[in-house]
Length: 135
Image 1 (tube, rainbow, N blue to C red):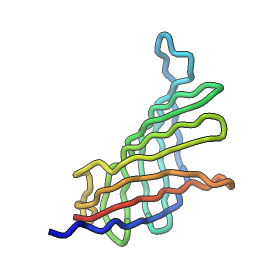
Image 2 (image 1 turned 45 degrees about the vertical axis):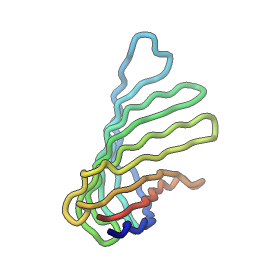
Image 3 (image 1 turned 90 degrees about the horizontal axis):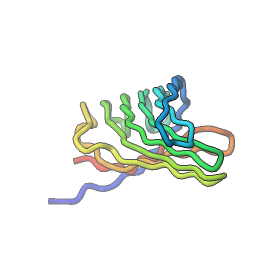
Image 4 (image 1 turned 135 degrees about the vertical axis):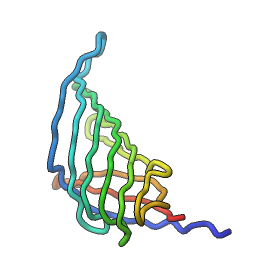
């Protein structure tokens, strides 16, 4: 059996929908939100996604966890996939990464597996880099 070769694929996205719903928890000293977000991707990752996020933030930092359902084309393969990701920011430092949920791929993305890294450049453009294997 041969090991599947990892491929790196990149796309840019715009956030086309952002619907926060604040919530409270006794004892929390940060702002808490549940957010429904939609994104539109272009590049080697092309399609749309719907994400549900739990977010927390205060004057020192912020963080989130998300489940995101992407539908579209990755490396010429059409289908959908779920990405579980998280992010953390403190001051100007930020990190955001995640993984494709094993077995979540459909259509031509059925055998996809891998990691995700989200970033934003100085102009404000959002990017997604996937390191994926098939089969």
